[in-house]
Length: 101
Image 1 (cartoon, rainbow, N blue to C red):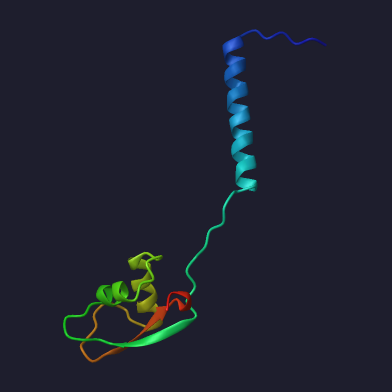
Image 2 (cartoon, rainbow, N blue to C red; image 1 turned 135 degrees about the horizontal axis):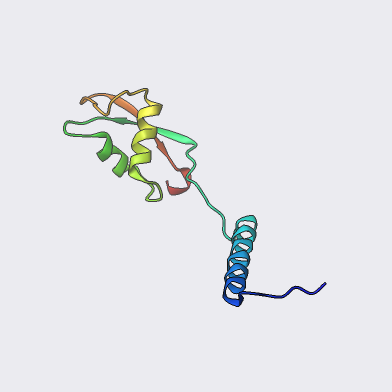
């Protein structure tokens, strides 16, 4: 059985879209490169000084590989803080990356 192509432009468009979808599917299966995340296995205690904020403490103790917002969230979660308000004299735990220390 022989198939006749009636509209050549439509057929080529179909082939391009079909091949593109196959390439996208295959590339997601064999993704090149690995994603690494920062893992913290140690914590340090930091005393809050006058004028300190969680953002300042996170910036001082960031390895440079993690988003500051995520680190602030982890500090809040680790210390059971509902808000980012801290007082001078408070002792808070801050996660650190051992490889960077």
